[in-house]
Length: 227
Image (cartoon, rainbow, N blue to C red):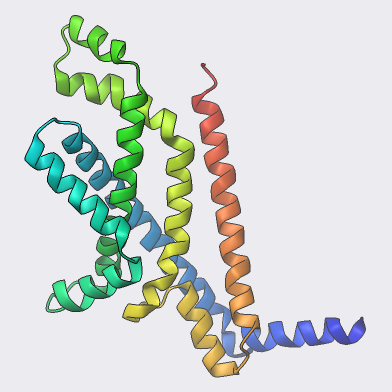
């Protein structure tokens, strides 16, 4: 038992404390959280716009949105990231985190689009009729009546999408962005320890996703308190 504890403490010291390697993990975690936040905001805006466009009953626009969603959902996120970084935005001077945020935002937008569309369709049609009878325009009815109810209905699924997005950003190292997973890989390259750095990365991701899950659960309970 003592030998196991000593081996574990030596591995943690060698991969975290020595040469202040914990700084790499902290910096990588910061980049991962920033990337997730920017991508989530962009993905939500894109998803909302696409959902409204798909429900607008304009055939050619609905067809474009459907094609976009099918392409994004049918291809790997890592391929999309690499194409956007090297092919589409390769000649731009944008920071890597901005390019990665765009790539993950575009990817997340396709999934959020379907979530919001399903949430809007789940709202009773009488809500729109009642709003219009009170003098609300279609746009104001959507903004003040329908969309808030839709978001409330899909909040658990939306929270799950953000958690998936956090874990999905682990592929940002493909464009040499020093996120949390790449930090683990850098430490592995310096210590030649193939296990401990990635176990530490997995534990950090587990802690962050657990915290996010609890926060989303608390928010959901507060929103449903009036039901």
